[in-house]
Amino acid sequence: MNVRWEGLDLLAWDAAHAAAIAALQQDSAYGVAMQKLGVPVLRAQVELDGAPVALAQFIVRRFGRLGAVALCTRGPIWLKPLSSAEESFVYAALKKSIPLKGLRLVLFTPEVLAGQVHGLSPWRRVMTGMSTIMLDLTPTMEALRAQLDRRWRHRLVGGEASEMTIHRVGTNPGQFRWVLETEMQQRSEKGLEGLPVEFFEYYVAARPQPAKTILTLRADIGRDRIAAMMFLIHGEAAIYHVGWTTEKGRDLHAHNLLLWKAMEELKARGIRRLDLGGVNTIRSAGIARFKMSTGGEVVTLAGTYF
Image (cartoon, rainbow, N blue to C red):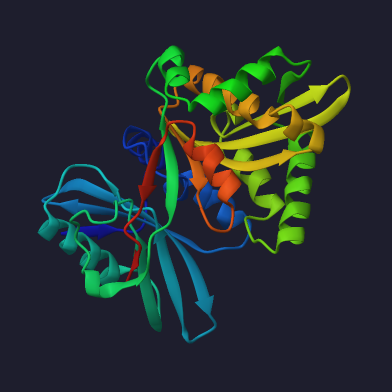
């Protein structure tokens, strides 16, 4: 088994990433944006008998001369089916060959469901997995509408009949920055953390076609903005990343209409899967119900391993 850490073809990486409907954190554009923020990024291609079998992108945090922690989030990307034993060899090869000096801790949060067999020892799990809602966008819009919870669909109908208008926000940073500023304010008020504003600008600039990186929609009443949603596109998948609304937006169920319009737009762009983001039924029960009522699948990942 051979591991290549240099000279990787990012166009081939992106093609493999799209075919696997892989996560945002394994998108090469995500790595480029993190590098622009000053975060070290490592990429590897694992080969078995001369054929590529896996790709892995790591975000690195260095601790001076002492060492570093490397995290492969929601990866590797598997290029062909492997047995659990073969997967174990891939993980071992990545750990052994990673080009970091000093003490090093290599962590994986694989894109594997809790309870599934994989190549990592359960004794090496250091964190339980997050839960999210995955929406399959390959059915028709009629089928997607039919799977909506009755109350969710009723609110959508109300939004469609209201005076709200939905607009697509431009992909230049100056056009969508206001959405991120509202997100920063929400984080500050709720004590939450997340990616900095600059990340989104770097992420959009990482590809020549901004339509392949971001979708932002806003709801208006007349000239007043009352709600917005932002989605990051990665290959043939997308993730819901930012949501904002006013009291008027809540009254009119603007987010139901915005999410429905986003599903329609993303599907038209060839997106096959929409990740609605993490769900926490204790801390954010209302948001969790909103996401779960779309008819998507509740997915709990296996966790983080060393």
